[in-house]
Length: 124
Image (cartoon, rainbow, N blue to C red; front, side, top):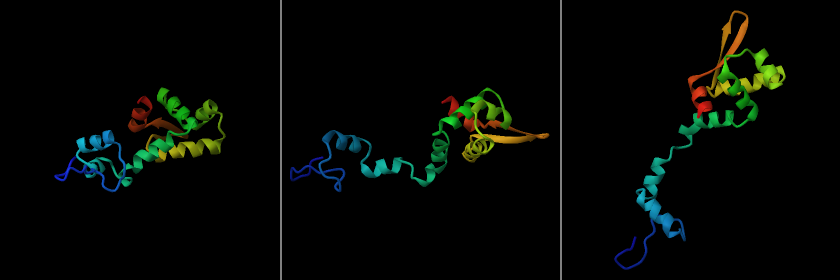
């Protein structure tokens, strides 16, 4: 943007030497304030961050893929993953806290399954 005095006016006065193409792109999006308003704040991204954290561990992805095939009890998940009871419990709790899996009691058994959220993330 050029002012009446012929000087170039930056869309980001607090940033020096911004490349012209970047400045043009920001201006096209409505300026810096508009761009900032389109980006979700950290607080509102908490649940999504929890999901990314839960899915960042290969063993938890393995559990998710197993549950995509069918609902399973911990004893079968233990055989599939090769984890100890305590490690499996730890990983299942992270997946549950993120809302990706849920467990139900069926008689003497605890059965894990994917939630709709878990199914959509693993199919993505």
